[in-house]
Image (cartoon, rainbow, N blue to C red):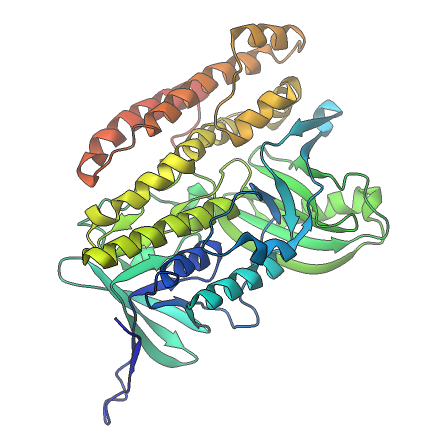
Length: 471
């Protein structure tokens, strides 16, 4: 299908301007750009619809830390985005735990980098443009179009005050956390995960700060607990004098109070005396397991719009890039087959779960644990754990924290043995959950049975941790 712009008929000014493409992607973030570039590289007509202006597109609130910097999809060549990598010397995490008067250095698996997120955003847009993607900025999506059988057939919205409609064989939702599109679609004839609530999301706020003298920890990602267990402060060095300082917290908390906590910490740190704030931005991000299914007939959700984010760290760039690529590749297959049914698109769900979805779901178990533990007890637990085991739990979703290490750690950490024992038990259930995700079904009709067994494991997790059910 070639791109066609249909002129509005004379006397029918109320009708929207219509644009026909093979695929319409909503959102010019990481997942959207990689999905669109993947499709355009195969010669199909694809449009990205973005609510921001062309000048502002790519400016997204982010911690700027990129894990897995060595491993990105090929749809946009890595060489294209490397100029945005401002610090490739970071090689570990630094946990500051004031409650225990401890600083814990932990290894972080995989290649790390800190990036200039706005520059990175510009570069991926440029990369998608070079692949042949058409961009429509200043466009606010208001509705998703569906056939009588529920198949998505396009979107409708406004562009610079003009009504506009994109007709497409496939709609890809890269509109970010709490995507408006998902409020507009009737998912009753699909498996698309609608078990989503505000409690599954966090708010994040960050400032880019210029300091006078180089910081001594320019090779580390610095984490520090907020005054509540469901939040943390970060300091990520873009360079040794440009720091991304931010915090993440559950939406149930008071945002302005927590932002003031960050500002208080900045005021009290010697290295930030006389610092200049050069940028401020906030956003919502998912801190939950990935959607059980992110497909419906003619429709796929990607990146933050499908909770493709590490729920313990908030990191989501690499996952979004791969989710976008997987969705793009499946879209191409569907277009070639002339079949946009959920069964045809389902392979996208499988690839996400095989690559990182199961791991993120098991990581969410530790997130659930943190909501049921006093912040001081949680910090005592973290301070008691060997650094490499903590790193495994935070990034891999599992850890080789066995019975012998359990006893050794408890013996050397008097006062925290109950928390350590509880962590060990939770770790066993997280491992069971990860194994179950390895059996993610190969067809939509088998999803309900798989969910029943997953929910049984989750019930055991809630009972053990004492946490309120999250889903």
